[in-house]
Length: 127
Image (cartoon, rainbow, N blue to C red; front, top):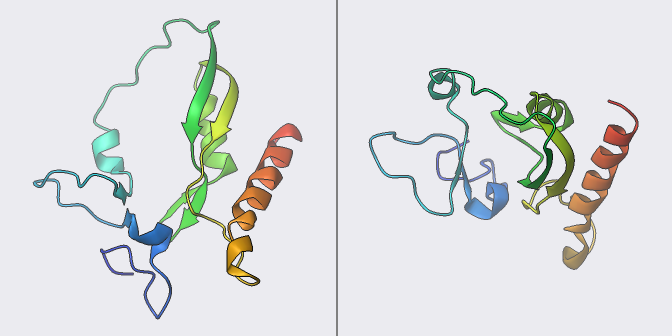
């Protein structure tokens, strides 16, 4: 896959061209682009303490996706929310992922809703 968010091999651009696999850290981040997390950079920071473990938190913005070189699905999400904070609810935000591969163009985004409902069901099932 190229760095410009193209799917390669004649595929449509990933996330409508918003996703890029690499970023030059010496340059500013481009507004509206989505980059892979930099695990090396993330490991530099000391873990932050949970200040109010009983405070109920609603995470109002998260995505789930499976892209070349980056997977963030239910297992990864649950690892993040089970870090000691009291996350009681979350809100999934549209991210142009898991669209239907076939069918009328106007119905392809329904695949993302179907995927999200499936992930919610898995979460309710105790995964």
